[in-house]
Length: 186
Image (cartoon, rainbow, N blue to C red; front, side, top):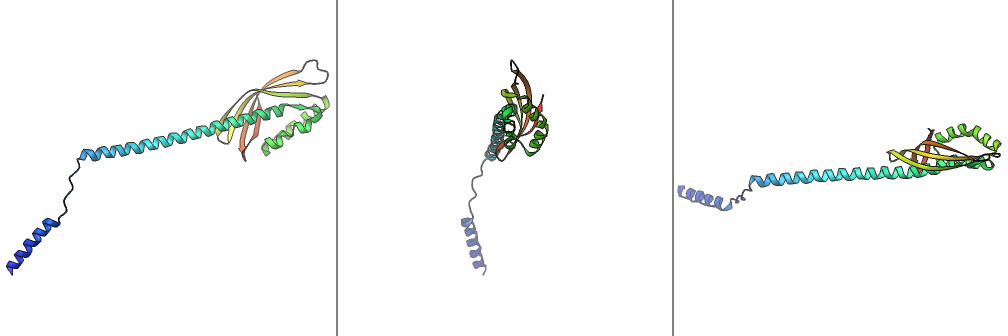
């Protein structure tokens, strides 16, 4: 039996040598380190590009909001400062389309005596925006500063008078439209 055992053990020894997988050649450790550093640098670079692209998109959105709100505020300022005694109610109706509900209530209360005075005196006024600039808080809230000249003519006046004002309008975007939320004369 011992002869058989020897043969079996020598056969098993030779099988192990044949079946044993070859070890792959070891990569140098510096190559693994270089590849790891390159992967880390690529991930950091991709993150920075994503962050920069997101910031650019936000800046673009703010710039577009400022531009659109400034255009709307300029148009509204002209409507607000232009009127004729023969069409007072129609001239003050702009607020229904261009003001928030809060502003519309405030505007109606504050302009009631002015409307009566305009109708009584036969006044006529034309507004003009000479300069305007908006600053966005976010994509739906913009503060616009406007320089407005209003030419006022009353019956009996030889020359129209010109009143120059600085107006600050807080604009909000609602349902795709820019609306006046508050107005301050300075």
